[in-house]
Amino acid sequence: MPAKIIDGKAFAATVRGQVADHVSRLKDDHGITPGLAVVLVGEDPASQVYVRSKGKQTVEVGMKSVEHKLDASTSEADLLKVIDDLNNDPEIHGILVQLPLPKHLDEDLVINSIAPEKDVDGFHISNVGLLGTGQKSMVPCTPLGCLMMLRDHHGSLSGMDAVVIGRSNIVGKPMAQLLLGDSCTVTIAHSRTKDLPDVVRRADIVVAAVGRPEMVPGDWIKPGATVIDVGINRLDAPEKGEGKTRLVGDVDYDSCAAVAGAITPVPGGVGPMTIACLLANTVTACCRANGLPEPDGLTA
Ligand code: NDP
Image (cartoon, rainbow, N blue to C red; front, side):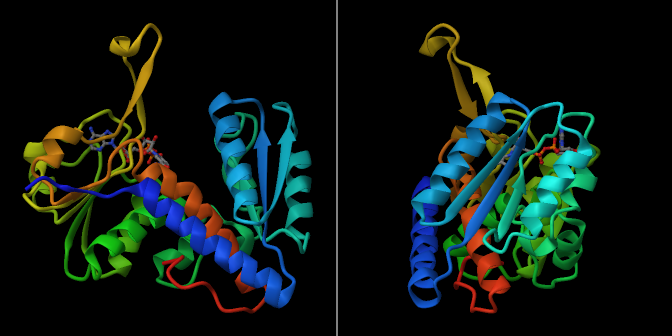
């Protein structure tokens, strides 16, 4: 039987709808508009696209969107001042500093200067610690989106064997923590893992977050397993015309889809969920800041 395709684009639209409903209730019942501030330093073209898209979707769900575009040569002190002002702005509930930052800026220092309760990317060391100890935190958006799709597909994840390929701080590690929080038996694989195919073959759930195009072939996948492909890799596609490219994930979609029970496509899988979860985190942060109940199903 062919794998069920987990449609991240449709799921993200549902999440945005839930966020918009909650935003409208916050406005009508409490006169509160959640606000998200995005800080971009420099002119990295990919970052500019992400920031534009985040701003547009923030406005579409009825939230306030603020963008701070700073010159690539901005000093650390000036950037920290912008963040400090946002930390103290009662109309801003979420702050995101678009990464990567120019080389002269200390990323850890900058991220840890965001007030943890406004850290909607979930990268602040306090949120990392809270997630690691199973406490209420702001959860990184990409792993949160993966978790939502897995819960939606399976209901309970309890007792399942999960293998996360990749151990980055922004995807692999928090993904593993979330799966552990849902009582999976979790293995984190990385570039030094021995017998990766054998490790992956044990998994009921495979999350690939590596950054290597189509690295995971179908014969690594246990029949019926669920495959979540986080990878976004751009390959040349001369068949589409000169200079054209196509996006592929970290798994070889066709061979994995032939064996898996369910799979996320690239594009249209994890990617759209990331911004939807950023909006979800902002509304969650706003509710927490105002001592109001959080929306159901929009956080871990
Ligand atoms: P990193 O480069 O930070 O981490 C990659 C991880 O993959 C590392 O832990 C590395 O291991 C591991 N790895 C590399 N080669 C191998 C290998 N041959 N076998 C097993 N493991 C390997 O990447 P990110 O976590 O930031 O991103 C991963 C992918 O997800 C990228 O394609 C990125 O574009 C995509 N991404 C997608 C998002 C979305 O919204 N859909 C959001 C964020 C990322 P080691 O630690 O040993 O070096």
